[in-house]
Amino acid sequence: MASYVLNCNLQGNQRNMENMVRAVDPEAVFIEKGQADYRIDLLVSTEEKHLVCQGVIIGNRTGVISFTDQEITDPRYEANAYRQRLKEVVRKAILILLKKVGFAQPPWGILTGVRPSKIYHYFRDLHFEPGEIKQKLETLFLLPPDKAKLLTEVGEVQRPFFNKVGESISIYVGIPFCPTKCHYCSFASYPLTTHAHLVEGFLGALRYEVREIGQTLSRTGLLPVTLYIGGGTPTVLTTVQLKQLLELIDQYIPRRALLEFSVEAGRPDTLDREKLILLRDYGVNRVSVNPQTINPRTLKRIGRKHTVAQWEKAVEMVRAIGFPCLNMDMIIGLPGEGEEDWDQTLQKLLVYGAENITLHTLAPKKAATWDFTQVKAEISAEKVARWLGGSALRLRTEGYYPYYLYRQRRSVAEQENCGYTLPGWEGIYNIIMMEERSTVLGLGGGGMSKWVDPVTTKITRTPNPKCPATYRGRIKELVAEKVKNLLAMVN
Ligand code: SF4
Image (cartoon, rainbow, N blue to C red; front, side, top):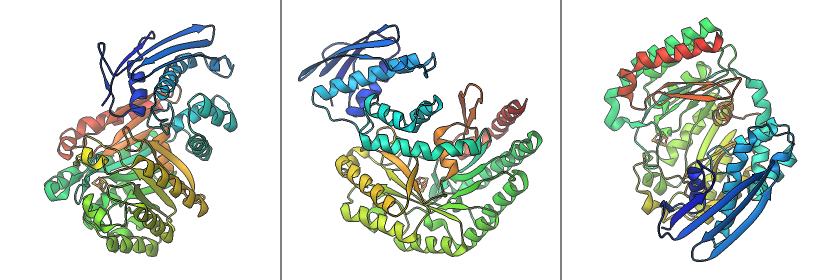
C-alpha cells in the first residue's frame, strides 16, 4: 500500500487527482504533507486557450513532464469546456507521471467515472465525428485503441435511441427481496429467509405509490416509454402477489407509448410456468434469467442457492412461453474459476441464443457480505481482461454487438460491464439508465428517481429508501415529492 502527497496549483482538484491515482494504484492512500512513497507536484497555467502543464513525481524513481494542450482552441467547444478540460489535463499529467515511475496503464486511461460513454455523447453533441472522437479518446484520454473502438461503437448504437425516447419518462419499480443474498451483491436486496415478514407491508406501500403516480401521469399526459421491474428479484413474490402488482400497473400506468416492459427474473429458483405466463399476459416483453456461471461449485460459493438444471429449465420455459427478448448475465473471473469455466458458461448462453448477453466483472462493495481481500487474491486482472476480450470476440462472431456499458468503482480488474445484443433487441431502459438524458421515476425499494432538466440537462436525484420498512414508513412523503416534481414537469 503506497502513500501519496498530491499538489496542484489549481483549486478544487484533490478528488480529481486522487481518483486518477486510484485508477492506477487501487490501494493508494493519500496524506496532506510529510514523507510519502510518492509526491506529485503539478503546475497548470493558461495562455489564451492553451493549457500548459508541468509536473514532477518523486518516489522510487523520478519523472518529469511538460506539455501544452490546445484542445479547446477548436471553435466547436463551448465556453464552459475550459473547466472540464483543465481537470482532464490534470488527470493526463498524473497518469503519464505514474507510468514514468513504472505503474501500468489502466484499461480506461484517464476516464475514471462509471459512465465512460457520456464523454462520447458530449463530443457528438458538439458535432465531432465518430472518427475524430475515437482519436481524441486515444490521444487526450489515453484509452487503448480497443476501448476507444468499443466506446465509439456503443455510442453510435445508442444515438438513434436518444431521438426515439426524446424527453419521455421511464419507470423503474424496485422489489428489494431475493430468496437468499448472493455474497458479492450490493443491490437493494433483503433475503426472504430473514425478511419475509416485511413483504406484505412493503407491497401495500408500493401499491399506493403505483396508484398515485399512475393517476398523476394520466392527469399530466406524461407517457412512459420503458417500464422495468427490478430489485432484488421481483419473481420472488408469490403468484398472487405478482398478479396483484401487474394488475395495478396495468390499471394505472399508461402504456400507450411503451416500447419495452422488462422484468428481472434473475434467480431461476424463483420461477415457474404460472409466473412466467402471468408476466407474458401482462405485456412483459423482456426478461432476464441469469446463471452468472454454470459451474455448480462456484454457484454454491457465491451464495446463489440454485442449480444449473433449475436455470436450464427456467430458460426453456421462457423460450416455450414465447417472450420476445431474453437477457442473461454472466460474471467473468469469479474466484476459483479457470479458462474452461468461463468458456463453458459463455458457450451455454450462446446455445440458448439469448437476444441480450451482459458481461459483468466483480467489484468489491462495502454492502456485500464477502470479505473481498480474500476473494481478490484469487482473481487475476490479466485473465479477466483476456476472457472479457475473448467473450466480446465470440459474441461478435455470433452476430452480437455492444450497446451499453458502465464501470464500477474499484472493479477488481478495472474493466467494464458491457451489454451485447442481437440486432434490434437493445435493452432501451439500460441505455436510458446509463446515459441519463431523460427522466426516470424510481418506485419501490431503492428506486432512484432521476429528474433531467431538458434545458440545462442538470440531473436531480431523489432516492427511495432501500429498506422495505423505511420505505413503507415514508411512503406518503416520497409520493408527494414525486407528484410535485411530475406536475412541475408540465407547468
Ligand atoms: S439475485 Fe441479484 S439482487 Fe438478488 S442477491 Fe443476488 S445479486 Fe443481489
